[in-house]
Amino acid sequence: MLAGVGNTLALLTSSWFVARAQLKVHRGQAGGNAFLLLALISACVYLWIKSSEYQHSAALGFDLGTNDFYFFYYGLTAFHMFHVILGMLVLVWLMWQNRRGRYRDGRMNEFESGASYWHMVDLLWLVLFPLVYLL
View 1 (cartoon, one colour):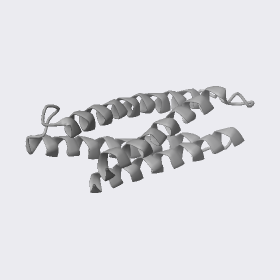
View 2 (view 1 turned 60 degrees about the horizontal axis):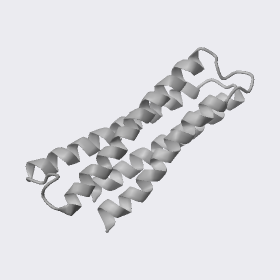
View 3 (view 1 turned 45 degrees about the horizontal axis):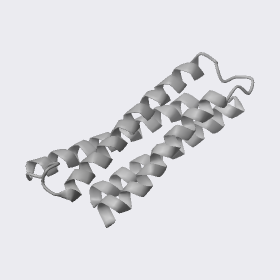
């Protein structure tokens, strides 16, 4: 349960950083990439907690074949983790493009799409958290 709360806090914090980055970039202010970097660091915290949780469960002998709960737990959370990693790559792309000046003059569609993807990954976690940790 504590790992799930930690993961939730890490992902919500990363979403806040992405929202701050989007605001900075939209306004043409410096600091957008710094917020994206903080979002990436928060995502790394999520990956570290989730990896530690997997290792702990495996050490206790729980795997995909243990029962239906662990089958769905590993399947759903691993699928989500894949999307977090993909989202991290999107954030890196946004940082690189922002550094090159791509989002000047109101050309924000790509940035907003990437930010929306990241927020959608977090929204999915807010559905998975109660399914996996509370029910």
